[in-house]
Image (spheres, rainbow, N blue to C red):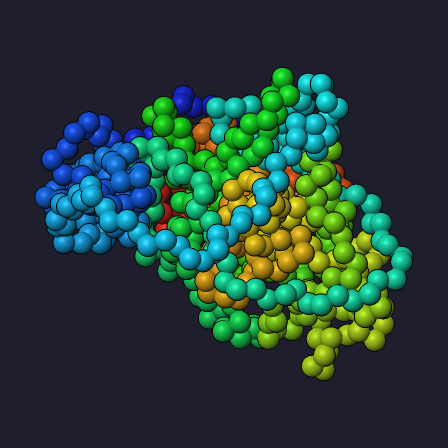
Length: 571
């Protein structure tokens, strides 16, 4: 019987992965030449612009600049075959790029500016920004003032970028402790206006990023048709009672915009040095080391591995919300919203040094996942005063079987405090993961004075907004998935298994080692590279998922135009 691809028996010499590997059937590299900006220039295309990118006049779309406060910060020249694409602000293949007509050189603003009329409206007083003291930061980090800081746990290093060491503290699934106190129902998650992400972080761009993004754009049709619409295509060939209109739509631009943001901006990580001084670092999605010959190739494969896991987690099933799949004695308990396969989501605590980031469990919270016209009830949660017990999620005669209690794998029949099921492209689940998302990207970051992409979303009180139905908010499920990748996968580092090191070896060895994808799948689904992990029920699900996720990786690689070989083992 053929199983998943196995590790090679012989170690082959490391080899450089050149531009032909990145571009498959092409012979043109996509690296952009970074030119120094002249101290004086006949034309300043940034005149009158505060920030952004703009085409350089009289260059036929071959050059563009990055502006900062009306001055040219960086100037870029695209290599042969590529031109400036004003849609993506990068070099792109000429047949795919959108470049406007050659602009005129802007006229400098007059130096004698008329005095503006006085403002008659009262000034707006900004609310004070909270800035924690050194002692508070130390206490939050689990230290006493004056003591040395611990080794940075998962997600508090550089997201796995190898310039800094990191360690993986992981998460733990505690015992199935269930509160017995009565809880009163609170209102359903409030609906707020479309979320506008803030742009407070200055993008950090390395020259080889152009090669990665140009390659993705060159294959955008395949990525959109073969990957992001996968659930639509699978539905057309499978017998299912789910209406096609109920499947989640995944758009290429939502994916690429979220990827660019998390690779170039990322999120701020507050830290304390050995002397107790506060400083801020930044975690980003890893697009490879610019000092490495294989930097762009490694970055592209990191994107491909992420996308293959997102296919398995959400895209292929067309659902942002976690689906009920853990059958117990032949039934799918509704109480699986509390946790599947031996996990208790409300007890999935952070490592000790990160416990202060966790969300508090509100027993009165009531949330329901998106309705699907299938034969399984979507997850929901609520207090015992509303749902004394729950039954089976399988519809019987047009309704769910709630006449008798049905236990999940941990013996739960209620759904009180069980609002922490998985959501997003790489699913966020449990009070630690939601708490960290809120701490780094949500309302808590904003309240504590750090740049926040979503300053008006408290993911601890509104976790369902990851799966917002509003088209304007579609990127949130991508951003949350990329955050999980940075925090849990890129930072994964245990004896004998460091993700970044394994990723680089995987690329250098020609992407033959299926056990690498198996290890990544274990990290994503269970928190360790050698599933089943401690505290998880051994149901055989991890073996099925390993095979499925290797298949998805090969599918992503094909859409990316990348060669993949594998070595199988017989069993």
